[in-house]
Length: 359
Image (cartoon, rainbow, N blue to C red; front, side, top):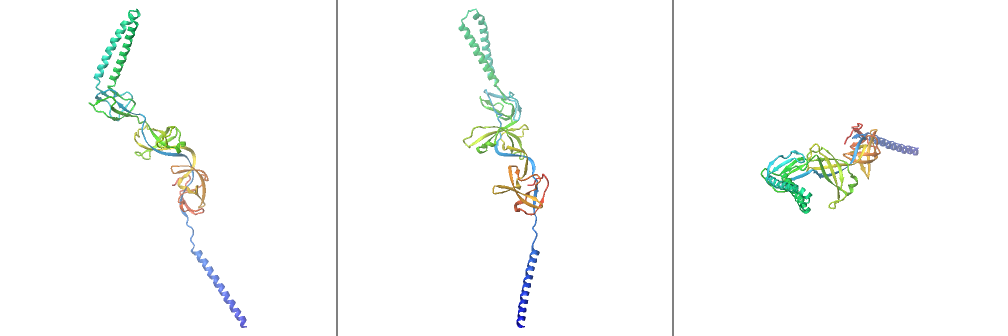
C-alpha cells in the first residue's frame, strides 16, 4: 500500500507540473496576440499613364546674332551737314541717312561733264570726215577712245558726288549712330550700324558624339534670361560638314523667328532641339521610376497593395518618360512615396484620377 501511495503521489505531481506548463504557454501566446499591432498603410500619390507627344531633346547655349547686320561707312570724305535718321528708325535699302558737304565733288563732276561734252562735239564733227576718208582711221579711233575715257571719268565723278549722301546698304533698324553734325569723315569711317532683327541666328557647337542626332530642319526652341519661361520658335538651318579642330565640335546654325521683335542680337540663348519625336506615346512622371541594377521599375497599386513591376522605358524629357512596355493606361502607378515601399506593401493612395499627373 505504501508503494502504491507513493506511485500515485509521483503521478499527481507530474500531472500538476504538466498542467502548469501548459497554462504558461497559453498565457504567453495570448499576450503576444494581444500586443501585436496591425501594419499601417503607407500614404502615396498615384496617377495613371496617359498618351502624349514626347520629344527627345538636346540642349545647347549660344549667343544670338544676325546675318543682317551692317556697318554703314562713308565712301567719300567730307563734313556732316545733316543727319536724317536717329537710332531706332526703320529704314529701307537706299534711304539717305546723312548728307556730307559735297560741293567739291559736285564741281569735279561738272568739270568732267564739260570735258565729256567737248569731246562728244569733237567726235561728232569728225564722224562725217572719217566716212569720206578725210582723216586717218588712227586719228578717228583716238577720238573715240578719248570720248570713252571722258565718259568713264564723268561717271566716276558722278558716283563720288553721290557718295556725299550716306545711304542704307540694307533694310532694317538703325542700331547705332556714330557721327555728329559738323564732324569731318574720312573714307571708310563708320557712320551708322543697321541691323534687321526679324530673323536671328545662333551658332551651336555640337560634340562629335551627338552629331548623329542633328539634321537640317529640326525644330527647336530658345529661351533668354531677359524673358524666363518664354520660348521662341527656331529651327536647325544647316550643319557644317567639317569639324572645328580647336574644340572637336561641329557647328549647327539655328534660325530664330523674331517677327515679334522681342529678341535682340547679343542676347544669350538656351536652345532645346527636338531630335526625335514620338506621337501619342504612353508616358508617366519620371519621378515614378525606380532604377535598380540597370533596370527600371514602378510600383503599381492593386487592391490597396503595391506590386513592383519592371517596365521598358524610351524617351525621357521635361519630367516625363515614355513607357514602351510593362504598363497600360488602366494601371495605377505610385508617383510620390515609393521610397519606403516593398512588393506587397499596403498603401493609402490619393490623386487617383485617370489621366492626372502628380510629381
